Image: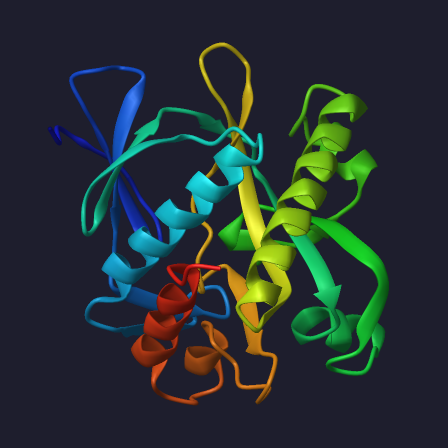
Length: 237
């Protein structure tokens, strides 16, 4: 049962429960882009992301990647383990687009020669700047370099599982952002969510964008795209 509102972010609210080690995550219908400079709302988006993230977290759990998900309560709510979020956004890229193309002048849509894992400081006030290993250590975001390697290893494993899964469903996993947290025993768990809000999906046959870029770029049909992603996830292969 929900108790007190502990935290509200761009896409979710977190509530305390009777169990101090468990929280309830509520997925919101809000849409934000460009560090919340652009805002909107899409009715039903929160429920779609909740369902998508549930399915993908279960897939990753089956692949040996521990997550904070305990169970999905209803359309918009998950029961999750309480974690201390590591304030690093881990971005995994298979194809150049977005900020990577702008920063380095790499052609949009160019396949990268290897999987690129980047770290960004989770700080809206600073616009989530890209950071290196020494920055992470200097700012005390992790205990040591070995934790950074754990984040990289987990991120690459997530990419390996999801890239193959979506390829079977004719969706290209272009890039995605994940967050990790530590539980009360110090275990590093995949946290937050994995959804079209945090991933870029391109239809392999048409090149159509099936993610939050539809909102960023005013392409419309955001909910339709999210519904199609969920439909493909649920397809039996």
